[in-house]
Length: 177
Image (tube, rainbow, N blue to C red; front, side, top):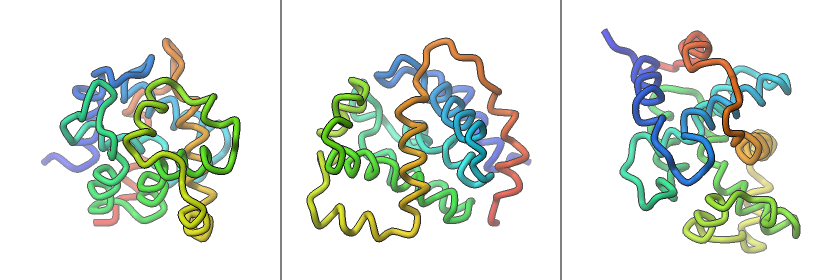
């Protein structure tokens, strides 16, 4: 019997190898982000969120060569059926975290990859002052901003990290139903 964890691993092994405008595939990117989270000592839920934050690219048809622009919403909805809010919220918020960082940090936009810059234009651009205030009030703010940092840095071509199977038990432990 196949479980959601088996399905996620299969998605990483098949669709996750496809390009989406970065120097790495979606699977390589997720694995690098999870490795960064692990290295920083993030809790299990945030490591899994880092691993799965771009799952929306794997379950929806791409908008263009840069993948699914609103992959945060689709990915979070998919994960919410199986994982707790501690996993789902950072996934749901990682695109908003990019918009937030662009709004509050004048130099941040210049540090984005070409793909992140392209998708930002389709994701609403920098947040308005009202959006910034609302985002800052979210209880998952810190987790979303940490995930955003790993998202920005987990794009190293050829970096060797643990495979998806190394995260099977963590994903399994976090399943809600």
